[in-house]
Image 1 (cartoon, one colour):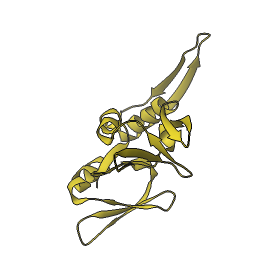
Image 2 (image 1 turned 90 degrees about the vertical axis):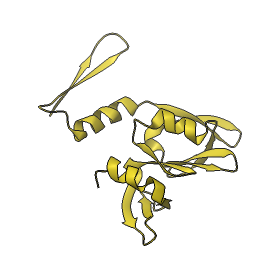
Image 3 (image 1 turned 90 degrees about the horizontal axis):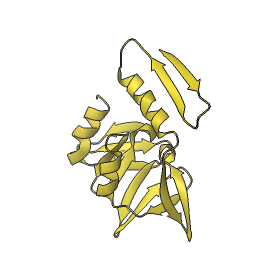
Image 4 (image 1 turned 180 degrees about the horizontal axis):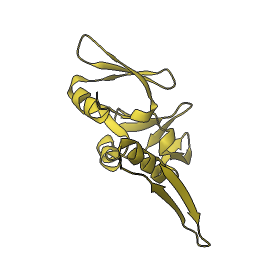
Length: 144
């Protein structure tokens, strides 16, 4: 794979990826380049701030409020889970339960449970359960 960055005098930056075949690795690289500067607005205390999508571990809905979790912070977002799911579905985010959407790039390990759920350990050590209903989608996305 050959990556070439072409700079122009204009405001745009063009990145060219040359490869023999477009495989999953190339698609993921393209995704990360596209997501490099994508941000989501979130509220922390009384302040609104912008959070990069690549920094988000997961989203969770609790008592009609939606929160995003990073390694260091918990912040509230305006969108509902179904709205986030629609926007992020072609990205590396996937629904794992009725109340959670996870960034699969932040999963450190997966452990099958006797109850047919999967225990996902995140990069910060936090553990989330993938409910039985969503296990097939996770297996498909991760090619397990």
